[in-house]
Image (tube, rainbow, N blue to C red; front, side):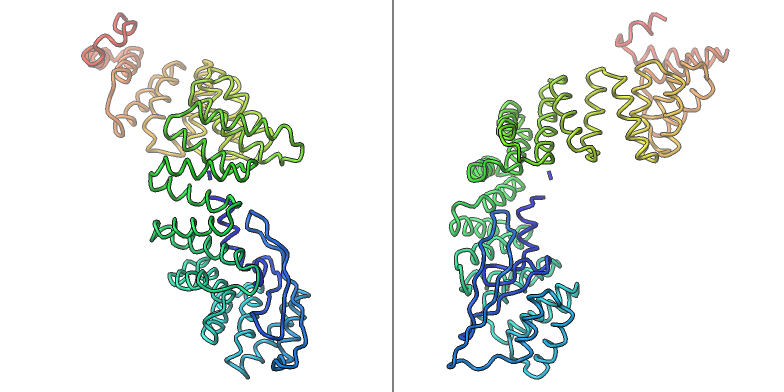
Length: 458
């Protein structure tokens, strides 16, 4: 499965309430909290995406006048004219290095222009000028996390202890989610605590439960992960992520009937909503196919997997799984067709050529199978198993010298087994090398131990 879209959105969204609405999307930022300004914001969706904040200047005779460059820059930002805003903000901070609002806006603008390092530097200046501003600490922390810098934790943690300009719970919720993500690898226990804090701030959100479930599963806390995934799905019943995560968890525990039940339930819900995107349904169909295959329900698995592939014909992993299912179910003509399509798309993939060769072999299309195995070992000269396939098909095609060369190549990579002794003996026999044939027949009989009665009789 798959990383979660929830967490990706969290890291890319460089705004919370009065902060910028997703800097990477180029939305304008809110100013930090000053007596001369107020701002209103639209609510965010549960997926972590935010709409932009509309900044409104409110005259206040008691407040100092805002610098003209800042006013002009923010007007340009509202119009997404970042190239016009940038020099104005540079002029402002060069004159007044303590203007944390100017540095904050410059950090946003530089990010919108793709200048990540300059954006981080500007946010650092904003925090240095005024360290107790929620929005600048959060944006700096998110930028550092996005670029993999170790001190992201410092600023994200600071943000969780500061008060946003508006929509306090929403802002602190996003900060806690971002802190959790930043801590996952180095401090999983603290990351889990951050996700639980986020869940307490917005109890109706599925995101922190899903994130906690992934973290717990990674640490082999399967029972706790299951409960988090179930809570995420209960809060967002249409969540494909939670259903797939549960199915994966059940598959790891070989709880196939439970995995199947969850996926079928989700598909039933989808069928009653015409607005569900095809890609969402495809993900569930494909996962259901994998679960059914694990249960040995090959025909049902093929039906589900084929339905998923039809909805998302570009999903090559699913196409490979479907081709393998065809082969497992003995539908070799369908397996051949599926593998031919994959080979056409990936002509240098040795594994695909071998799989196609095996589908042809099972249909006794020996010349075509031999050609695929020759391509396989040319692409991957150390593919020992493929030399065994080649030896067998060469023998069927009466190309006994090729069969022996293939067996010799295999012997350099893998131990001899009864079948290879028999194939070598048979090839030598046909080439009238009776001495070598006798030696290999004896080796075959010594190692077969009754497992190959037909060949032993021969």
